[in-house]
Image (cartoon, rainbow, N blue to C red; front, side):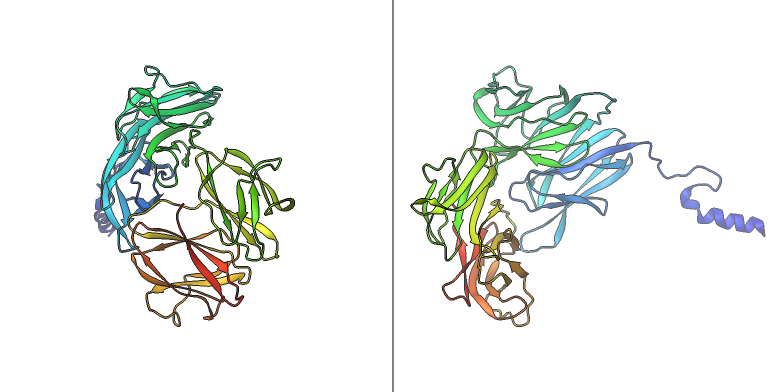
Length: 452
């Protein structure tokens, strides 16, 4: 009897190999590192998967977190929401036999519906205790640019000018330079057109990479959020994460909004002492264009128009090179003059319209916001945004291409404060809206803000 029990057990385990023999499954002997970056300027975020498990979401100019996997064979999948839907479609699959102690970066480029997937491969750098160096690789994914030269020099004041012959190397689109090690310290990254050190495309602020880390500096095409012709993202290949570098060649810009209904005209100073206003007689509901200001500390003072002694707001802020910042003057829920600060996403996405909405209406501290198809009523519809508070950072709303009616109501009610306001949204649109107080306190105004 015992013989048959053993035989049955052996047959049930046939997929694991002979009953007394070795397993037929591959055995991992180590791990490799894997990530993905998105190099399609107009794409929505891609989902990056190993087999059917999501590793992360990869937006433009960013990288997924670095993940480690056993040195086995896998299919890595890429999914994205195509035009006309918010449901993700699998658009690419890449087979990879992960090798122990190798580092892999998948680069997504081309057409989102049929993207090109490029694989960068490098060795994983193992660090010994006490080492004070870092490792850097440099990559080129900016499809609008030709070949580029890469300079990476210790930070000096003034910065060391690039000179042909001293570059680390020249890159064509899709290429990377071999990894190189650098001593601990501050460095400036400069990108120029290949063979022409006078055509500077990008110059970073001084950066201090953490020692015993491997960094990928990847060059991307600029989008509407950028001020330079290209942008650069630093990707931590050791622990994961990425950050976009600022270009010191371009001053930051600031845009001012007057959204305090009862306040009257103001002058805005961006210097101390107060000498000449940057914006004069700024009245409700005026919006300035993008105003260039020096990077760094920003002494921001609002006074009554033509009365430098009547200070309404006096705050110290900071603006960073290569950024675009909005300042909204509102009356907050306590009835005080206050500033809301926001950095809006101006990048156009080819598959959807992108709308931002900010509530500055003091008479309506909380509102519900509805987006319904044109001529549809809201009686049986839940709000898209519930209880949008006064002065909160602008809320982002993705919209499929369509005609919509926008309603703003009292929170939890169908009492209309604004609407219907017709919006014809097309894929790629960037739409900025602000809810303002109206002379009639029972209602408000929804205003579309023109791009600068």
